[in-house]
Length: 334
Image (cartoon, rainbow, N blue to C red):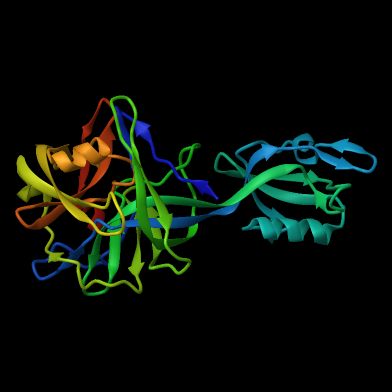
């Protein structure tokens, strides 16, 4: 599996997390209540195919070949099908090569958002006896993030505050799952370099599934989870946010979220780039442990006057105690 990472752009580093969808109603209705998030979750996402991360040689009995490279396959391509049969995993690709038994195979490859067909003749590896085309591939991505909220009524959840991406930019994903995660360490942030949380997936059983990925995060439904210690709040529109004291909920050790003091330095209700707030960490405990905002904290809920107003999304590279936040209404409207 590969680790997801998030944009460093416009003077800020984007972070990681997991998210939810309120299901069509006005999630800012006065009677709607949300469990406060702040718990760190690990998530896995299928890349929707097998992505080529390297091109290699195949040593067969009659010579050394580079079948995929010679056919025009490049690093970054995603193999979608073999002779019209869908390929989603490494196992699917291996099965296709076994079926072909060394015959020329037409592979459907996606590159730069467009699909093309390339014909490759696999070669039998003299050590393993298996047919190969000379590629290193991956089919699954993983990452850490912070849950922002869970709707008390239907357990729909949301977080992230920004789009998930990989080294190549936009990312097509499928079958995302969410797992409880324990934070075991922190790489502190410092000027010019974003820090990050280090965590472990606690078990193989998902606590939630995500159904939608968009520019504001991942959205879906929680399953088995103990909400007995979770506080509930109502959400407030960005119009109620003011410059001044606020709090965020984040997990920087173990599995239990903690409340930390921040200050809202700027409110920009009209910003559509997930940057409705500029926040500054003022809690000395958090600064001492992490240096401020670090990767893995994105999605941390922001509360002011006892209401959920948004989520942390980015950290300023030149000052890790400062970062951006998205208004909760922009997440809920998705």
